[in-house]
Image 1 (cartoon, rainbow, N blue to C red):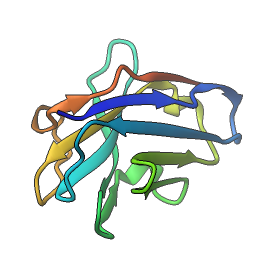
Image 2: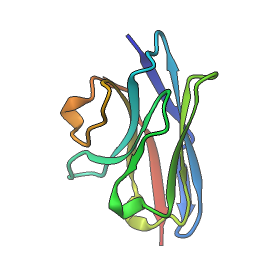
Image 3: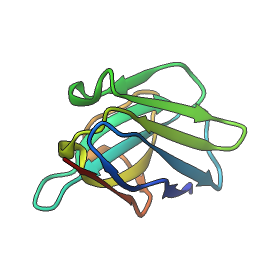
Image 4: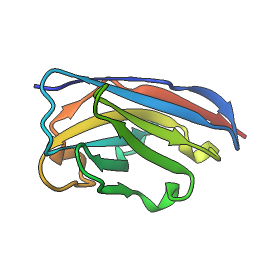
Length: 124
């Protein structure tokens, strides 16, 4: 079973940047996809980005395209979320997730392993 630990959250002003990290321990299979979700108070958990661990496939939700980038470092078993041009609407608790599948999914229930999350706060 894969264990996930997020880091890199914090508070920034609108237009600023943050880089989130998700460190995976335990066995990580090449077919596993990794993803970032976020959840604001009173709202449902929302898909942000996903990436194939060993491949080149990646997906971003429309609201962050052009601003966020998901990347991976398989040697260090770490997935990153580079967040640029941050907006107040990006404020949320960000979670890293893993899924043992050849394909990614934006549905939270399809992801089996979750980290504890890290807070991102963007002020106007």
